[in-house]
Length: 159
Image 1: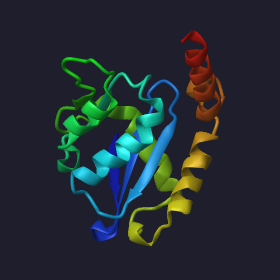
Image 2 (image 1 turned 180 degrees about the vertical axis):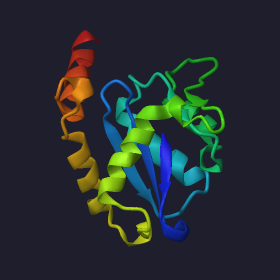
Image 3 (image 1 turned 135 degrees about the vertical axis):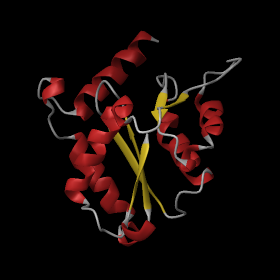
């Protein structure tokens, strides 16, 4: 997970990418980078997938200091030490390469210098929709949406 900040701090977008399928989830945060709003947004975005979340890697930005709240909300019931969130080393963006690449794709639709507070939630969902339907070489030219859906169906059938 990561955040993208608009011009002069004008709005924030929290982004999450599933590593194996490159499925992107994103949401605009009107409250900015305070720790609780991103944590609540991440819990809301990942709650439908809580049974399949194994780990979350992020940077050590102050917006993610409520990571224990995320781990507690998404960890399997009965876990003695729920720790789903891992923090990458400082200045080591390669440790979370999938999200950095996803943020680069987002910047094709929202260039630097854009004030995010002017963007609508519908526009953010439209970008997510487009990126998740874009074929990827990594996925044998399938889209993240189709691969993710197939994995979720297989997981549900196995349970």
